[in-house]
Amino acid sequence: MTRSTPLTQAVDAIRKARAAENAGPEPASMKFVVFEDNGGGYHWTIVTDRDETLVRSASFRSYEDAKEAAGIVHRGASRASFEHGSGNPPLVALPARRNAARDRSDAERWLDEGGSFSSEAVTR
Image (cartoon, rainbow, N blue to C red):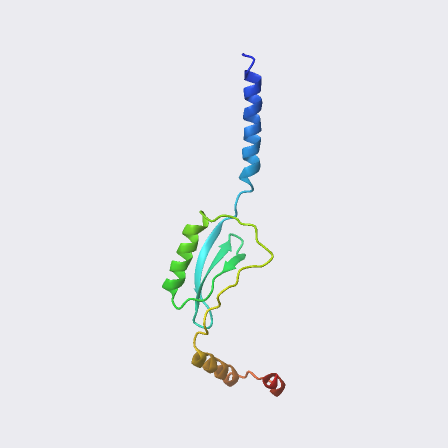
């Protein structure tokens, strides 16, 4: 054994300890799920192995559009960086209203099925 052997072993032990600290906890098992909502829009969501929803997308017109968007997120997530958020979050562009005529027909169907509203709610 040479004089440098204990030093080499100590350095190796420190490197292993640092690597273990940086590894972090084992990530939970997750999956992407694409589904249709009650309004006919399609979403992708990330679900854990315990069926906990981590994130849900905005609405897409078709299953294929939602699946394609989920694929983009899936491929890009491994290259995403973490950045410290500032006090002023960026503005989010909200999608335009889908279809006002369909929204009216949904409301009419709700009323036909026994839904009700008060006149106070309408005048507010």
